[in-house]
Length: 410
Ligand code: PMP
Ligand code: GLN
Image (tube, rainbow, N blue to C red; front, side, top):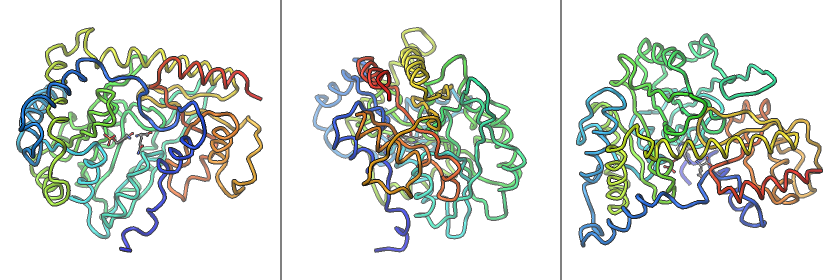
């Protein structure tokens, strides 16, 4: 095999999705809704599919004209910068492919990419496959009796110390997976200042951008002064419209960067499925017309998820699994350090505590979660074995079933 595959063969989603499927579990593991997407977006898909023969054929490589047009219009308003639909937007097969194109396009052998821990796991293998070296900087919890994702902060000095002459890019994720941290403007400004000072590109993974709670506000780093020119912003229709299987995503930024992502895209995927793009375009058109109103799905979804978040937090709390309340996204981490459990003999004692716990939880309790140390580099995962991640974008009946399991704890 090619050397670029060394060390990137293990994958948490492959492992734990299979394990959850092998047992009859209540699944709060992998992040996807177990309820239907809203009717208007389902209807848009149906309409696209029956919209004539061209809906079933190739389309423009970098994104269907209707989708890039509405994405540019919609996000131009949000980011406060004019976005050119043809030059500044690339439609991809999910946010995954947007990330892959970005790293392949920008990172060379020997380049360093700063990754903030804990991070969505694919950043590390993608940087490595591009020939780059990941450089890690941790968010550290400040502690407190009512833990919140806002307690997890970067040290500005520590972050600054990671920027070297080799730094090509930094990747941030807000709202963050797995903690749910929503970066405040002041925190983004520290990152932006360093990017500008060191001439570094910022890759901003904002797939959970509409999901914020308790007044937390999602801010786009590309909207800060001097950042549009050096930021690639990544989004996902899967998260935006609760339709993860559609695999429509996008990258947006200044054309001088985007043209390189397009080179990767045209030589690998070429384009994302036509009908799904047309459906997502119609969804954004609907949202554009009702943006900011109570009918907007971008308001209704977080309102619905806020209830689910509070419910899950209360359940975990009563089972002795101290949750960290997320300000955004649809995951919640919980501290397992006070729980005693008998990990089964088939699981090596060398595995991190959270991996052993989740395997026990799946096999013995019928509840699936994801170990949080999987969101850390091998160097640092040992320091963060005390948390597991639960997904709450689930039917209330699923959350009740989880509650029943948690109530009977021990
Ligand atoms: N980034 C983050 C932070 C995610 O949680 C996900 C979802 N799995 C992705 C990117 C990938 O998104 P998509 O499903 O659109 O490929
Ligand atoms: N992003 C989702 C999660 O964090 C799923 C990722 C995947 O299945 N590859 O759970």
